[in-house]
Amino acid sequence: MSVVATIARHVLRDAVRNRVLHGATLLGVGMIGAAPVAGRLAAGQDVKLVKDLGLAAIELTGLFVAVFMGIRLLAREIEHRTLDAVLSKPIRRHQFVLGQFGGLVAALALALAVMAIGMYVVLAAAAWWVEDTVLAPAPAAPVVDPALLKAVVLTFVQLAVVAAAALCFSTVASPAVAAASTCGFYVICHFGGELRNLGSVVDSRFAASLAAGLSYVLPDLASFDVKAAVVHAQPVTVGYMALTAGSGAAYVLAFLVLALAVFAKRDLT
Amino acid sequence: MMRAVRLSDLSKTFRTGFWGARGHCALDRVSLDVPQGAVLGYLGPNGAGKTTTFRLLLQLVHPTSGAAEILGRPVGDPAVRHRVGFLPEGARFYDSCTAEEFLVYVAGLFGYPAAERRQRAALQLDRVGIGAERRRRLGTYSRGMLQRVGIAQALLNDPEVLFLDEPMTGLDPLGRSDVRNLILALRNEGRTVWISSHVLSEAEAVCSHVAILNRGRLAVAGSIADLDLDVRGWELVVAGVGESQLAACGIADRRVTSIADGRHVIDLPLEQPPERVVVELARRGARIVSLNPRHETLEDYFLRRVHEDA
Image (cartoon, rainbow over all chains, first blue to last red; front, side, top):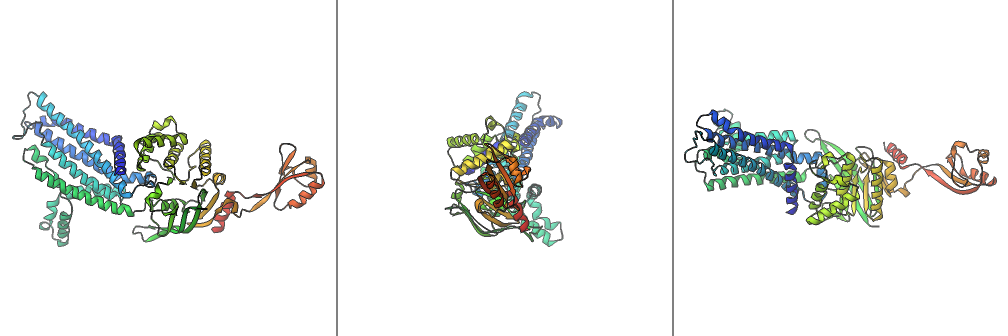
């Protein structure tokens, strides 16, 4: 276990020093910071827009971090031949993959935490400084609403699934193919309902059955999206959070098992 | 003598082509025993299968057939990894890490406690001559410095068997000399060192054994002393004669080098029988100091075997 933690710490340190990830996170924070300006343009929607844009920025930036890191981690180690040196030490391949994933998830959590803090700072500033604000918070929702964290947490779980998928794809494919596959996976998994009902709009029974089958196998990432609910002060129960996070963890586990099985057999050339 | 490494009919065929329908045989039934304490020079042209052998020994690729053992245990045994070190060819490591951080990380992979990690890292960085630069990021290092860091990480666990894939690559003459001395020091400590190299003169200087690989097949293996090196001529050292007497014996000036104490080294070609020259010189009062065959160099031998094999 300590070897996995050692690798995870190393990946996290590498990520923290990565300029691309710095840039992405700062861009996310910048988008959140600019949200009040957009709020001004939509009269009476200041706070709602800050929340909407803030949560969307967190998800988009997190998605970039998950895909960018997920597809590059293994590929870079192989390309630079660092993997040869690392795997010649007394570690197992599965420990290496788990450590890489641990570091990736930790980096993701850090990026999301920084952006969430940024969002709360902007919301607090909007509530405190803007005297003439035509605050029109969603009914019963405070401006600085702790419930927003529920959306951030489920976004994190969703992105952990995407990161696990990216890592899994990168064990068999080139970075470009893995990136395309991960983005495709993300999009398809957001349209589970549409896939299930494809039969009503296409004639091909095969295509309809295939789409329906996929919708049952692939995770329904739309279920992780509670942004609208928390912004509008609709209840997101602890039970729902636990169930959704649990299903996310199960998909993470499944992708990791697949990645480990493939990586264990792979010739590293 | 105990065996450090044994390869038994080890083969590797890589699947190529879109569907993996074609095969490329990188290593073809290679059997080789490396005695403990030997410094083995693993020689061969590009694509001969040298790096593939290392990758098989470290389980980075899986063999198509055959088996390999290190220190009497199968290569899949994780305990073996505690006793080996490996320098991959042309590794870049992590640009964002300092040399010190990288070595501490690698020490962590062995499970050493935190204090020992730093201690081992410092010791090996000292050993390969990385001084204050150890706190600089690896991304700013030259090829030669990275090679030194690579050697340091390979030595971190005080290995009994060391695999060095092209250790001289990217090193300046000073760096080569340092690595050569390091290898000799490791040999004197009784460690087994397996080096792949294109720099045959370097291999000749440090290796006790040699194995030549060509197109995935082992062309020759054994100790350097046992190689059937061709005799290319004779080196005769004489004293007590002048250059005029040497010329009178039919020895051309260009073949004579005067050394200290009135002695001369005479480079005799193969076609000139040394016995006749020795008798003639002795008759003229010369004292024969030594007569030795001049063998082809390892490089000559390597080229000859590769051409024969082709």
